[in-house]
Image (cartoon, rainbow, N blue to C red; front, side):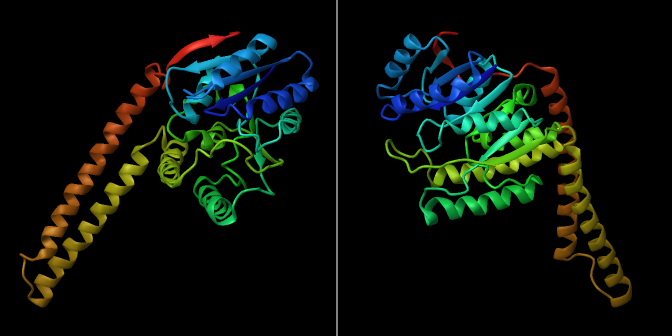
Length: 311
């Protein structure tokens, strides 16, 4: 089964055309599909329109949040409520073409676990959206070692088994391929159509960009060092201890051969570095303990559902 997951927030104007496009696209899948809309606390008539879809289309499922939690939490809810073996994520703003859903699913069926959309000809402002996106994509690819042209494109397809154990929060949804790579997923990228936004307002702003940058460091840390945090903190501790050791040698040599003094600012720097190195080691030990607790306890969901239609 194919599960098409669409987070929605104040998109009342785009929904009729979006639903029509999706319904036409899923004709390629026969009856083996479901459409899941997650209303992320919309303040307009979005939920009423979605309820109308659910009455007409039995394979359309509506999840309504009790308040606005964010796109990542909406996507996590879509994963939790989905029944398909292949999950396709799509924005509700009509900037992606629902017809490309078929292209992504066909690529999955070629043997890939993750297929990411690439908005090669992007219809956004160059200076405000395209250039910052290219810089971010290069930066993310360099840190994560996963070369993708377009991390920000929501249109992606995943085998559910690849991401079902991943819990999303903050802005982590755009880094899902990185987490999938950690599990050995086979990842491909296909070009998709991109249109100008014709209704509603963009949910992206400069503050969100800063959040993405911070979440990137968290994502890289989790993808590389989730089960071995001591490698990070221990490396910091060893570095500080090594620098303090070199300072200690310098102070001794200066005292013995150059008639220097013992008490100087350098000796205080050496002592501070020794303390910092032990703090790094302590944080590494605590992180190791927390990681083991993390794997032994049940994860808490980061959203609250008010109602569900056609579940």
